[in-house]
Image (cartoon, rainbow, N blue to C red; front, side, top):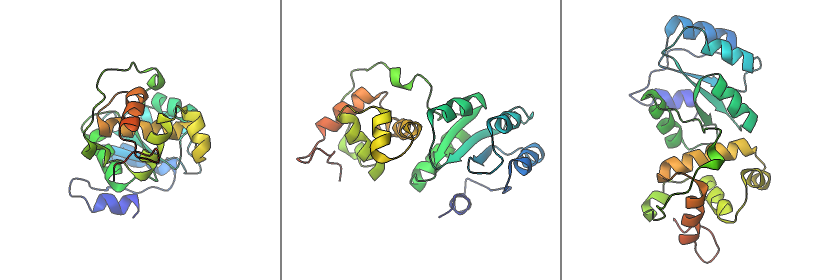
Length: 202
């Protein structure tokens, strides 16, 4: 299901415009002033400068969310500079996409901060198994690789995606499990490991 169809099926969302290039997006944002503008990073003419122009267009109430197949770390820095409130990965489960958009609509920022890897561990290491069940298959896979001590870059190489994409996935995992960092996540992964070493969350 495409993102437009997904949003139109939800009562709390209303799609007011669809644009195929950054220029028409810019005009739509200025004229319609939507609550959220979702910009597809695969648009041919999208660039860091174009995103900054959108962010500084004067439509102060518009929250920018970017849709991407994968995200490099440098892209996250650029999106943060452009005033992005969140990133949606096209491979995400529909429920995760909607949850992210609802959080952005509530005024939250769901973009992973630059200091993500430097988060200080804290003591909470017991999470009910029912919470782990909300993770997607890819998120569980990443959780297992984190427990093996792999870095974002190493996990990205293993899964053949950008390490920035792994950072976004980890951000979603931490949010779903209500934890703050990969050290706690690794502890959880080991705690809930079955005989194969995979989190037993089925």
